[in-house]
Length: 433
Image (cartoon, rainbow, N blue to C red):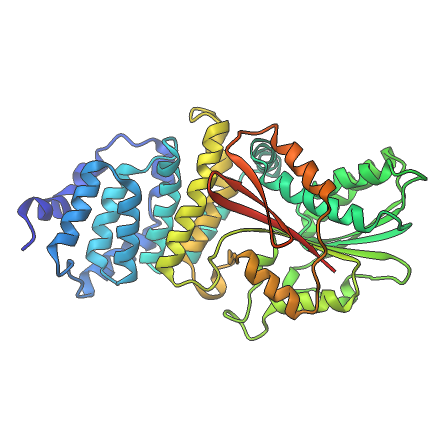
């Protein structure tokens, strides 16, 4: 039998919880869309959900709430949703709203975004929440400033870009005509350092052509920025824009030319391509086979070391909790909790990924990370062989980390470089040919 005080928590607690003094921004972030709230209520009213058969399970949740064990309650809520126990899940969500805070400790901040994902999943409207988060993106200049700040305070992106650039520079050291294909060029910031490095090459800079795949509205600005930089450093440079999704790219879009040494860059993007578990087209392996057919001199891969692609919901939730806890803790060391831009960095650069992983399934789930071992298998099946990163690249990355907290560490594993926070590997980088 459920204790009376627990019943009162569920049936009477809603009004009391609404009287809590949550910050306005937290109310905006955590308040379900009207259709989501209606969907949740409909599910509870019309589905015959019950509390756990073993009241000991319920008492464990109550105990975790009383202790303020946010991580435990998050997992309990995810477990209830995975078991379709809608009444228990909604009760947990109500309690979690009082425990999370986007201005609190790392687990409270991450918990706020994971809670939003749970709300969306419970209502089967993950896509709506994901689009809602994306619609909150600030103007381009502000968003760039948040991305830049994240790049500066955490070494994850610098590690990935520097290791990839090092592999490309090493492979192209004797080439006079170079073509680099970037399958998700973003703002093009990765290539600033490489253009400068080639400019300083003894005997003069090579001719460089970069093919950037991405959002057409951004490619114009990327072209302008890189052309201006190349002119400043007297580097012969051309930019070829491909305004398309990486899934849609075909050989004829890439303008590969005889006489150019080809390098291909997959930095933080292959996990966005759907594989055989999503579609029979299997764009993830199709793109790799296509690139191999171009006979590139080097192909670089940088990916988050996280297993969220084909895992069922509950294991995927646990993996996301573990991975992003380390990420948020590493940010906490650098940016104080009262830092005015920290919330913006986490909200606009990380939150939508977390929500997508938790709330969405099928083609709507675009954040589908895989571990290094799986990537190695895919590259091998496509016909690639490893291109070992040189000791110079490794030494350069280790020198980079001296400017950051000693909680970061570098590990060489199976021909790849891995960057971690404390005991959790977060990013892996390797090269192929």
